[in-house]
Image (tube, rainbow, N blue to C red):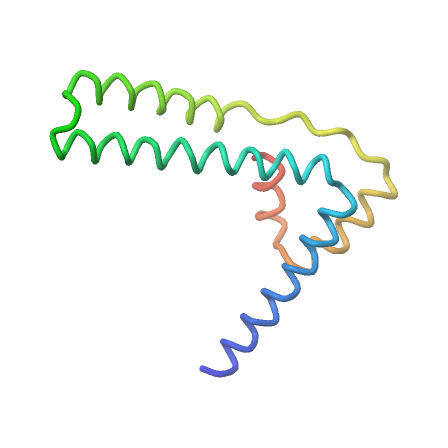
Length: 115
């Protein structure tokens, strides 16, 4: 069990070092990622809050349904519409891939680029 937890801790340290370095190299992309995550987090939590308000009788069913539909539409739009990313030079791609491949699998990298 100690081997697993120490390996996990080492992987967390590697990921943290990578993200810190990435944020310094590409502040605009990092800012966009943080903004998109914050927007998604707020939408999901707002939907949950509205549902709780309905369950406690603070809002009516039609209002809850309308608000949740609007939020669900925004979440769907976020998932379907990807943010445009600047095309990198070949030497930049090689530098990033070396760091990323040490941490993530090819499948994980492809999924991250889609988002």
